[in-house]
Length: 400
Image 1: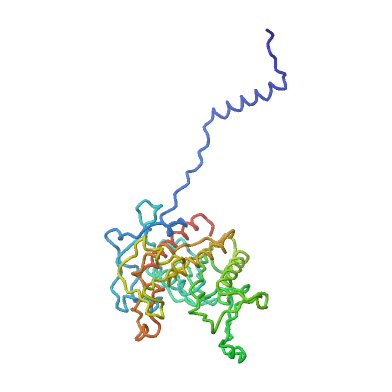
Image 2: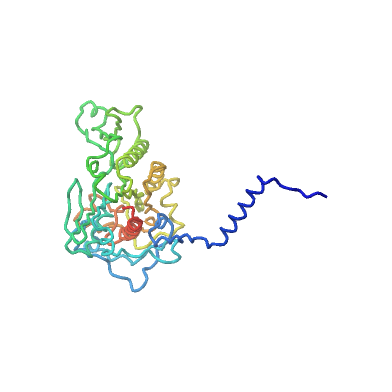
């Protein structure tokens, strides 16, 4: 039987392939660097999946005292007579039993040398910034108050030339009062309106988008009928004209969130770390803030209790956090703004609000218990620990 002979044109590619395979297998392959696991607390999921555990012994004292000059009286629970909260730490599921380490204030300031950290939003961002300012002051007793560029409050840390500041913009978008300015409206049972320009950021932060290296946004608690009742509703404008047909509050919120997220994408430099903090949950029990709602408690909620407290399908007084988070997630889709999810870990902490320890005589009688903000020291210090881990990871990547 005659041999089958392949044409030379077919033999050449086969020969070259064999030679290349021999060359490739005769040299060791270069090893790609093994990705290093994120430090505990630095992953975006670390606050959204885990549990509270007793702080490992010996539990260190709080980083700051009631005398911190950045403190706010209404949240200064120890000075206002509340017993100290139990020493608890957050253990993310990803960390295999380890807890989020407490912020190394000196190390953080050194890593953030020359940088600026800004928070924009409502009083829950202020609650967070007070905890951060007081924590950082433990490493720089030369820290001084800083209120520039429209900041509501802030601090300057001269040792490492670091600024941390909060800009109060409760709706993020520009809004103006027109209450009591129209007799015609008053005849219809409306005392006036609040105009919201959905496409215009509030003046408190519109000019600082290029100043900060890290920006953390939030809005939420003002989007409620107890802030804007039917007698003084929100009226939404775009391009200087009323939106028709008129939007209700929920739809107006969604439009504002999308518009502000688009503005942030457009105006904030890409190298800036952009975070959006999810809603901080309330813990009113037995009624709303103005209907004898209370939160004098010393226990954490169990995981199986969370849905009955917070799931909107049950219609409870604390349902707004999860509803707000759904709108935020939808608005941030396809943006480079990262979700800083603090809701789940905070839902457990029914024990940690200022409640009746508000520091002012008759405050509870006038305003009701504070089951919305948080005692300091307290839960926001763990928010700070997680925020610090995420900022440090960002800086170590050389992005900031």
